[in-house]
Length: 374
Image (cartoon, rainbow, N blue to C red; front, side):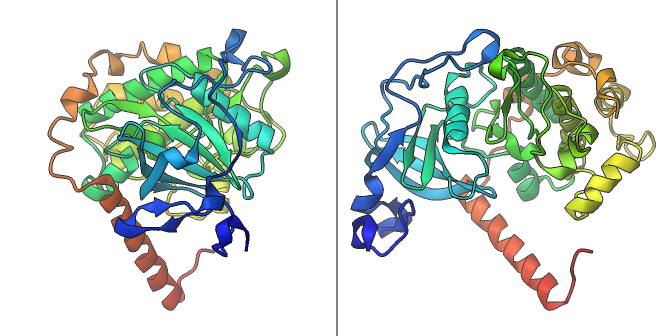
């Protein structure tokens, strides 16, 4: 068999001593570098300069043999994120491994996304150190956010959601990230608690640009997107409506849904299957914070959420305008509001494993009791 005579499919890892992931000789061959090595940059309006590769910091290499993949700390439909060790400097990083065979995008599009992620420069946005292709996978090397996502944190310790001061801190930092991305011509397209990451100091960063879109491709500044991408519970009505097109205001809707998610511990309609979520989003009144049921939340918070969740995208505020809302004026830095919340928690990889086991047991129970979505 190829791939170092392991009998394994190229681009897949095998576990070694101590649980870390080791790569066979065939796996270490990188087909090509998506970024790193050459200098690139954002063109005007945030697009990637033609022919430019993303600039990787000199201290990070595009050689897969320099990275030891350890525990799994995140996963999605087409990617797995590992805690990893950058061996030349013994530094902990995160490595996102995207399965190129399962992605709808062609390799040029995926590499363009990786370039954009490497060129981003904002304290509240995850920036890729470098990225490169290894057989059937694209590896994206990123900072390791020790506490994982807000979703992880809620599932493990705060199932009913966070208190308002914490929500305000998290949302303000996320909105700063959105304002920056929109100014650069980027639509994130997948804003949700699972993509808002936290480190041990409480620093908040927006991550996961696997579905992000550049609004300024081919020089067309006003072009709306028509692709159906994202997660149904968080999708804006115009994204779910075929042929209508959408712009950066779709992120504002998703931001409002994320605010509800942080307040309640789950997104509206999250218990329903995707098709029903689609119909409910299009046909029902927008979700929101109930003035009676959600008495623990301030009027300013409820008003801010209502501003985001307007079906007419032209009536939603921009991220820049939303940052001026009274709800965010008194928001404290998350380093202070989240102090104490992150102590005494098990390591991220142990939390991820526990959640995987819980999900498996739930699915097993539903299957064996003939419970299915309709």
